[in-house]
Length: 270
Image (cartoon, rainbow, N blue to C red; front, side, top):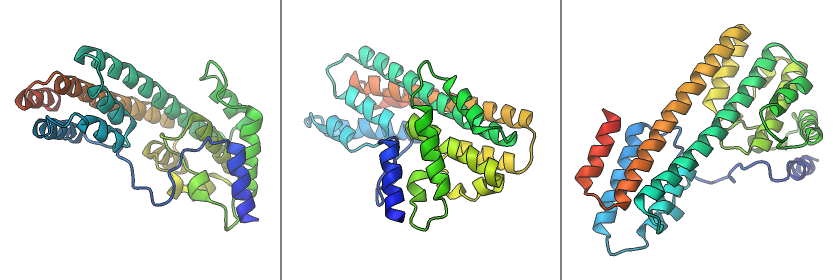
C-alpha cells in the first residue's frame, strides 16, 4: 500500500513537484548566497576566463555545471553572440520574471499562514490563491483530490513525506498550491501543532518562520505585517544580487580588466 499511495500521488501531481532525487547535491541558491559570495563568484569567473582565454567553451561548460537557474542563464548569455548591453538587458528581464514568480510564491505562503490563524475553510484559501493569477495554474478539483489523499495517508509509514510535503520557493506553483492547501486542511483538522510537526520538510525559511509566529499565537495583523516586511526585504536583497550579477557579467563579456570588474563589485559592496 505505501508504494501505491506514493505512485498515486505522483500521477495526480502530474509532474508538479520538482524535488531533486535522493543523493542530489544541494544547489546553490541566489537567495541564500550573500552579496559578497555573488561578487566572488563572478570575479572567479573573470580570473579563470583570463587564464583560459583560448578555451572558447569555458563559459558554456561552466553554465552546464551550474545548477542555480539565474546564474546559469547569465553564464549562457556571457557565452552567447549578444552584445554586452543586449546581454544585460536580457538578464534584467529574466531577473524581473524570477522576482515576480518568487513574490507570488511568498504571497501564497502568506495567504495560507493567515488562513491557518483564522482556521479558515481551505476552499476560501484556494479562492484567495486563484485571485493572484490571471488564469488558474491548476484545477481546483485536482488540488483538493491530491490534498485529501495526502491527508488520508499522512501516517502511512511508506508515504514519501520528504518528496510530497515540502514547502520550497523552488517548487512549481502547482505543487506549492497543493501542499499549502494540504497544510491548511491539516491545521483545520488537527491544529497548528500538527503542521509544525512537519517542519523538517519546509526548506523555505519564510514559511517556516511564519508558521512559528502562528504557533506562538501572534495575531493575524502582526503576522501579516511581519510577512510583508520580510518578503520586501528578501526581494530587495535578491534583486540587488541579480543586478550585481548582470552588471559583472556584461563587463566580463565586454572583456574589461579584472581590476575594473572588481571596481563594479566594490560599488555594490560598499
